[in-house]
Image (cartoon, rainbow, N blue to C red):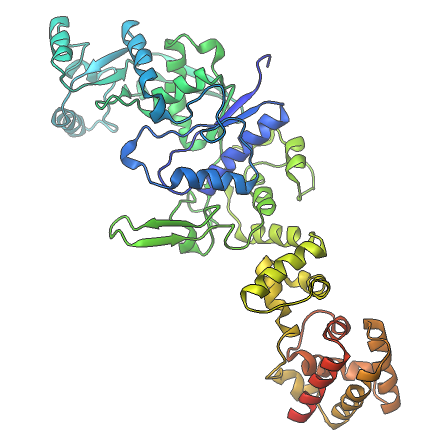
Length: 511
């Protein structure tokens, strides 16, 4: 394209941002950065009845946490401000009036009762989808059926009205979707949508088109649920004279529940045992008004880079075997042509796997930071060098940062019980005697490295005539209480020879 690529993410502040919305924002961001363009965010708050306090700030925090950077938004400003539709209200009426003046829209004065009666008539006549359209509008109270004098009188008197799009009766509406190819819809299936409401606020359809045009949007990447509205939007671009600069459309595949039985909704998260929101959301029950808390990926211990990598693969693939991508690598690999039109099934095990990979790839210093923070919350202190040693040892057993502190507890708490299965199979007088001898010599050992401790253990066992395989599990249980865990020699080295000896002596005495 000759024009600068400009994409937008346009959420409504009606509650927490669903991960499907984050994926939409991500794909917009990746395309913009790949093509050297701009990413903007617009808050679509024309439906004031559904506005939820705190939702806009939640959207901002979610995108910041995920690493999706905005070039223009209500928070950073930009050349096309304001970026909240409620603050742009005065500009929409002129475009609605332009549509009326050109004969592409009309005033409708129907009362709610008259609309209900129309739908009832159509339902009784077994019309499958009762609509206000090119056929039914001829029987309704609007500026197409009323005399011009009566229309003027109604408008002058302040009678409530809406402005509806005048959809042609017999016409094919077509556009080329970047993901789905050519989409062709007959106008008879499109109803005369309301463009301006009786309160003077535009509906989504008009405000969306006007704003995308004025903000010079070149690509509209959005969810599949907006595909039925796209033909209507094409008509609006045509009737407003903007068809030559109409953005290219791309409708993303649905996100399905893990079992594939339908769209993953905002209500599915905690019910199915995993988050569907990027951040924790504090809301209210719709019926009782009682406070509610919905879990978020950030608070559940997921790293933003793992979350983003996982989302990127929900509907897109790079065409290679590579699975782990940094954000710059995603930008470099991304193409809208490799986005699937088939729904993507959500896999909670996969996002956990991603988190493990990113956590374990971090430096020991970073991991020690997570460990130290968690331990301090529990009132435990650990020197920085020891924290790094522990983190390096336990990271392969961690999925989340908080797991590091759980796995590290063996270094701060002596065992009070011992794995019964190992004790019954591996513990006997000969083993106990050998371990007691090892504990006796351990504090005087000059080499407290893992290799030095293993060498001393081997020497003691050779004198006792015991193979190392006969005592290792019993030794692990004596030191940690558990039958499995990180490398035992490293554990003893970090604990120190004195602490290790005392733990073995306590086990020998207890068992």
